[in-house]
Amino acid sequence: MNRYALIMSVIPFTWNCSYKPEDPGLCKLNCSGAIIGSNDVPLSMSLKSATTQVTCDAGAAGQVINDPFFAQFLISEAFEAGTAAPGQRPVPFISIEPIVNGLRSDLPEHNPNVEINGDIFTPARYKGIITPKDNWCSDTCGVVTIEVAAVCPPAGSSSDISIQMHSGALYSDIATFTATTLSPQ
Image (cartoon, rainbow, N blue to C red; front, side):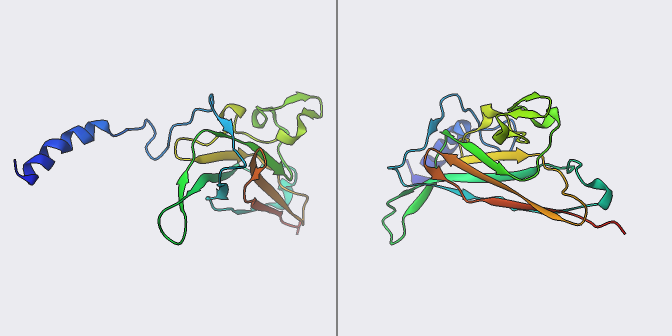
């Protein structure tokens, strides 16, 4: 059998083995078996999405910003690639905890990870994190996605919202988003 005929006979089998996701461009997310990242493996967490700046109208001070801030981090491990620089490959199923600082939404629909009793949020550190705890891990492509509902700062001021991930002693880059509320005229 010539080489061309052999290749043509194998191609249909490889097409049937490819994964076709329900949501094109997204990898599967299942955190039920996720583990905390190990300190002895050369893991890294790096910010892969862009950060934005938002400007609020003067009268919007204290109101929720329309679109939540969205951050994606890649968890990867170094491996010997046979070159001067090590290679990097994504690591799925790593459990994370988000660290969020800044002005965040008090609305119940933006707080699925806390218990709200009057003005008390328990645990307060999860206030405004829209992404449910069941999704706090890296997907099959090594990507962690977090959404945070923020509010506009007082009129005439700016405020930063920072989002960082950690898994055990491993910490990510910090994604910093800036919200500015215009001064009244």
